[in-house]
Length: 83
Image (cartoon, rainbow, N blue to C red; front, side, top):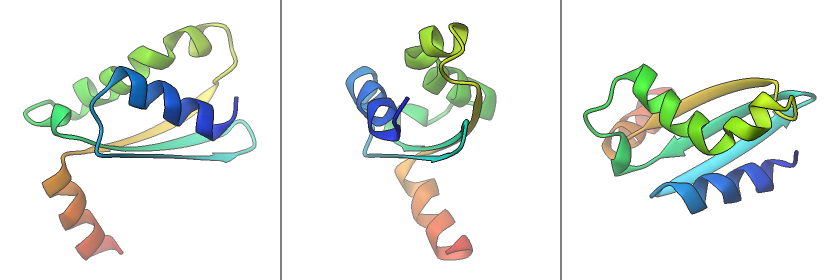
C-alpha cells in the first residue's frame, strides 16, 4: 500500500490538520496531527488511527506500523524541541 493511500484513508475518516506517512519496506510510520486527539490517551490515539486501516492490517497489506499522534499544540512543541 502506498503512503498516499494511507494518508487519504486517514484524511477521509478523521479530522486531521496534518497527516504524513513514510514507508521503509514493509514498515510504515504515520504522523497524525489533529484536535481529535485532545484528551485521549496514547493508546486511544493509536486506536483511532488504526481504525480506518484495520481492514488492511487484518488482511496483511499493512504489517508494521509506528503511529505518532499529536494535538496541534503538542505538535508545535514537538517540532520546537525535537526538530
